Length: 125
Image (cartoon, rainbow, N blue to C red; front, side, top):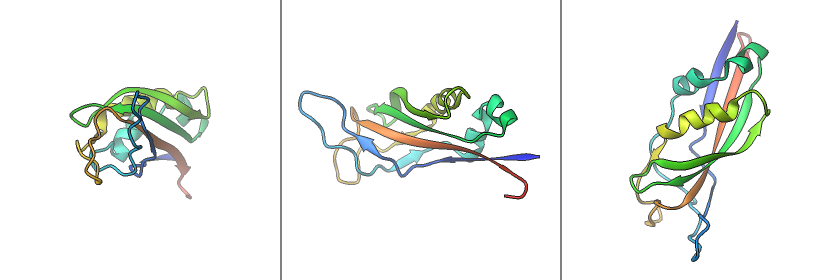
């Protein structure tokens, strides 16, 4: 029997939004909400479960004024073809951060990259 282990990394890498005057990249954010392991397990692609495959996705999103994510896209999906990217996109609405980064700057309007790991293990792992 297979067990799903799903991890969303909140230690996030980020990049500045493309703007006329570049905004410094977010180095750290304070998450108010992130997907739980159960949230991730609930969107785990059935084809990947059947194949016993784990996967990883890098989402790139804009931060909205209220700290939610907007305009997300899949930057990296590995492996391709098992719908891990679609699963990660379903998780995007569950992320929410504070309006201010720990350094005091606003998070709204900036771009953030969020790695999401999907992992499947067997009973012995």
